[in-house]
Amino acid sequence: MKILLLGASGSIGQQTLDVMKKNPSDFILTGFSVGYRTRCIGSILRKFPTVTHVYLRDEHKVKYFQKKHPSVTFYSEKFFHLEDLINAVDCDMVVNALVGFSGLLPSIRALDLDKKLALANKESLVAGGEIINKILDSGKGKLYPIDSEHSALWKCLKVDDKNVSKMVLTASGGSFRKLNRDELKNVTVKDALNHPTWSMGKKITIDSATMINKCFEIIEAGYLYRYPSSKIDVKLHDESYLHSYLIYKNGLCRGEINKPDMRNPIKFALYEGKIPFETKSFSSLEDLKGLHFHDFDLARYPLVGLAKLVLDKKGTYGVALNRANEVAVQAFLNEEISFLDIEYIVFKIMKEHKSIKDPIVPDILRVDHEVEIKARKIVEKIKKGERE
Ligand code: NDP
Ligand code: MG
View (cartoon, rainbow, N blue to C red):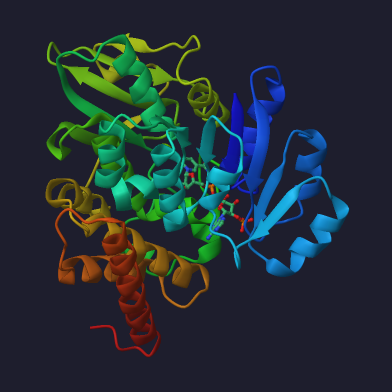
């Protein structure tokens, strides 16, 4: 299988390269993209001499790399859209390991070009789930999730997808799971980046601390498996060993138990779900000795509640949710706002959002841009101490 990897310099990107390197007879890397972290380019080209095309963001570095690697074509953001790389590169599968809204257009292009899409970029489904499903419904492309919860659910559904009463996503609770809401007021960026069970990119680590990551994952599950929000629940789980589970109408459950290592779900997606896997049937969580579970408390993690609005109302609510969060997380990482301001910004944007029904791509791009401006204005007000 010929693979184009988007986001090769990131956490999922690097782990995808590990999986490919371990299975050289099954995967050929033909192209990849990085953002501003260009230091890995040389070593990726040494390890994968089959690469013909590379995309990076900084125009100034293109000349340097082009001279050093004359047989490879380099592109930069200034003159080239990332999604055009999918047209340029000879590939069967696109692995989308980009973070944030930047992943949406590449996901759409990959499917439109009838490629297999291994998707880590959950923001694609949050902002464009309806459009993505329409392309799939037209018979174009194939979509394989990389997110660990959705990979586990995929496996369980492969074993038995009849009479499911609930899909349950497990959640670690993020860096601040031991703190109450009062104690969240003064937490720092450094504290937030210290995730208890997973080592990931900065944005998703903050998203896990606010739990908007779980909100995104409910939306992701809703679009991937076409389940309504009423059939998707969340359970807190300390060890991140049970990756998610199904509850059937007869009360039996089925889940995947595995150590937290993203290389497992990445490998499963790269092989299109066609390799052996194990799921476990159990009658109650108490049967899973040594693993600890707690009921999910919406009052502690209120952002999770927004998944219902996005899945039920659709339109451009997902676009607004995603961008409000991206602006707020970046402002928190820049130490412009406090941790709880992230929630404040997201709720304010969502409350005032005027959704567009059945949006097409230009609508999504416009709303994304408008929300970005609006959210930045809220950040500026907060900085001046004018939070309403
Ligand atoms: P990282 O921040 O580690 O990597 C993101 C990648 O995207 C980097 O290569 C980055 O480039 C690139 N990138 C970011 N913005 C742009 C842009 N505008 N144009 C081009 N490239 C860009 O993120 P993760 O690997 O942690 O996460 C990737 C996705 O996978 C996210 O959607 C996340 O939610 C999801 N995910 C991640 C998991 C994990 O364990 N990390 C688990 C489950 C899901 P550079 O850094 O070079 O600038
Ligand atoms: Mg996940």
